[in-house]
Amino acid sequence: MARDTKKMQIYDLLKERIESGFYPPGTQLPKEVDLAVELGVSRVTLRPALELLELERLVRREKGFGTFVRKEQDVKNRVMVLFSAVQDGQESRTEADREFLQNDRPARDFAVRIG
Image (cartoon, rainbow, N blue to C red; front, side, top):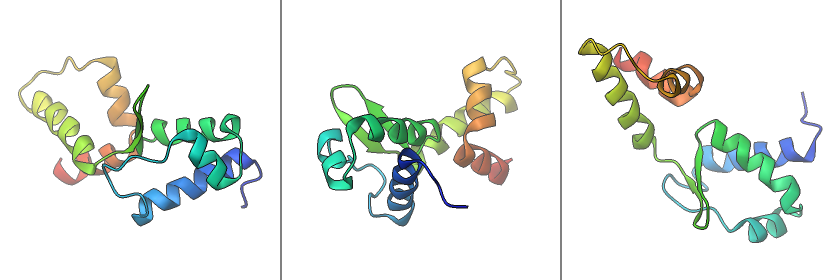
């Protein structure tokens, strides 16, 4: 099924670039204004696509610094800390931690591999 909104087309393109290594882990994406020009869209269209990538934990956005492709190790480190806490009987993870493990596809996949 083809994506019909420009936002989703941009999201798909950026996700493909991240997953293919065009934007390697740890690298900074071009500034929003430059990326918008490169992709031929407005920043109003680009921002929601970047927000979706952030929700999927493919990128991290730092106000005033830019958008960076997450390193797989960033996700692994957080999962290992959470997994260790559970192993030690510290079941009282925060709601944010539970949500992270439930909604983060790379984290879930990694937790399954180590669990």
